Length: 333
Image (cartoon, rainbow, N blue to C red; front, side, top):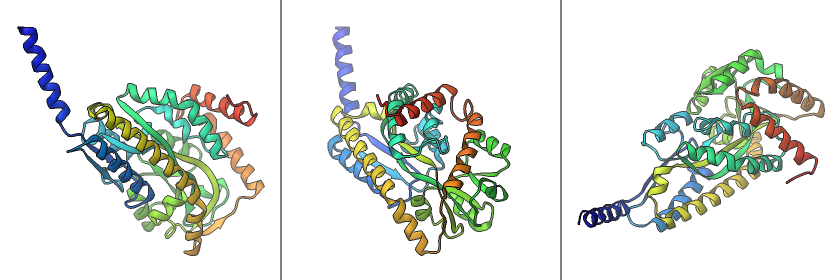
């Protein structure tokens, strides 16, 4: 009788749990009404239809829930349960992901980045899962370029200006200071006021984000150098994932992959359009000559020993180098 009663109680509890509506609260730094925001909303609508009655999908944009480190902290305590994050936030979940974004001038083309990411992805996703997060999809937001108040083209030119650095990255701050730069740690929401007041004079940003956030106004000079890609992922806390119906999980996964693909394609294609729009508003673009590019590559290669083992784990750094050598030699496998 006890076993029967326990079984009935378990079934009743399971039925009650299954009936509880799933509420997704997703946060990101993306601008409201941007292509990123619209893709997330479309993803949520697709999922809600399948998950069923009572399911809700709320998206917080523009850093309304704080910076990326804040978003990760809020997920840990259950205030949020999903996020679209760049590597800056993802590395707070697992630092191995830093290899995709924290290696300046390491990747020369999107194809190289795609190849390396696909090779690293299974290990990264397993690492996230071990920390309690499911990586739904991977994407990127364009190449980082330097926007500045004053004209600049050589690495040393930027040393005389204070430069934005992501809050929560003390290792990066230490490396920059050691190289003679003047980093100022800020949240992304503080970049525009900091540029306007003179607190900073340089911001590394993608052209799309610079246009959306209006950095080109107080920082009307851009160096046409693809410094590093902005890489990101859609992640969801495992309790929220497990609370979904199987059909709901399948629908969210498919919708997330579509959203990431749409964002990636649009962000990559929009670089020239964003620059053209900013040019029409007065942006001055410094083109990259072969000689200038070589100067920057020598500069980046001199930084790699400082990054290896600090910003990026030594074994992961070496793996990325090996994968790029394979790709460039045509030995893809």
